[in-house]
Amino acid sequence: LQRNIAPYGARAVAVRKALWHRPEPLAIERGAFRDGGAWSFQVKSTGDATSEVDGITLPELMREYSLDSIDILKIDIEGAERHVFETSITSCLRQVKLIAIELHDDPSREAFLRCVSPLSGQLSRHGEVTLWQ
Image 1 (cartoon, rainbow, N blue to C red):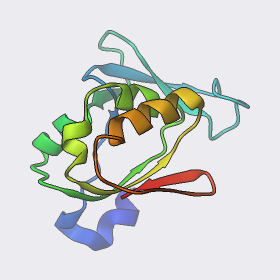
Image 2 (spheres, rainbow, N blue to C red; image 1 turned 180 degrees about the vertical axis):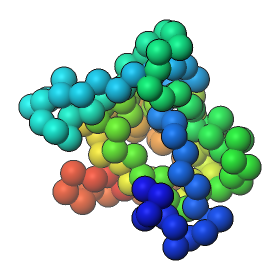
Image 3 (cartoon, rainbow, N blue to C red; image 1 turned 90 degrees about the vertical axis):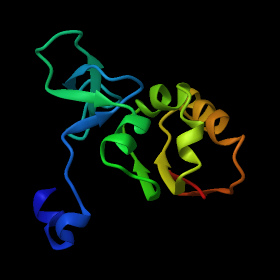
Image 4 (cartoon, rainbow, N blue to C red; image 1 turned 135 degrees about the vertical axis):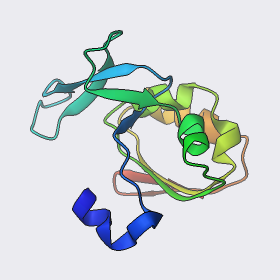
């Protein structure tokens, strides 16, 4: 990630946090999602200091980095999107121009659609990715 964003200088910052529905310590669980392949990573609450990464909400992230708007919010978090969109983040989504999200199951899709439905925007699907703008 550091190498990929290096050309952007101060305009891009690598943040070692996991988008989550509440601020809490998380552990990375490998190989337990779907086919258990090498790509199969999920996070789970640890409830203690043995975490591998801290969870952060979208509103917190925007506050912490003084983001007035987000041009593109890309989300591919292997089923955790359901938790993120089950919380009340609709107000900060008004500041997002485009969401590209991989929705991994029906509960995730329903939570996402409930969250964006009060907003004026358009949905489209491109392969596994759902776009909202």
